[in-house]
Amino acid sequence: MNPLKLYQQFVFSTEDLVSLMKARGGCRYIVLEISKEATEIPAARLLHQAVQGPQFELMRSFPISGQGPDRIDVYRFKPELSPVDEVDFVFPALGDAARFKVHPIQR
Image (cartoon, rainbow, N blue to C red; front, side):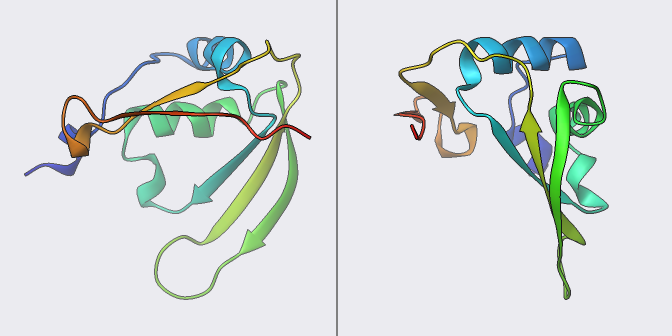
């Protein structure tokens, strides 16, 4: 089975992604895996492109040795966020009905 078929894409441009994060993301920080494989999924590629824009600030990079990612980058999302009580996570690999509602961390 093609592993890319396990993913659903909800954004189709970096502008879509930033708008969705403002309205429904509920998270100020983004943690990205940096590797050759990390951008094979189109939506992940959009996220990697978006963090290069003015809405994001690179906070810190953590190098990783061994197999897998080269490093982990932590970005801060600068725009004002809409309040979010729950975030809906969809996991297509677990079946069509695999949805989980989680509460963002509040500090």
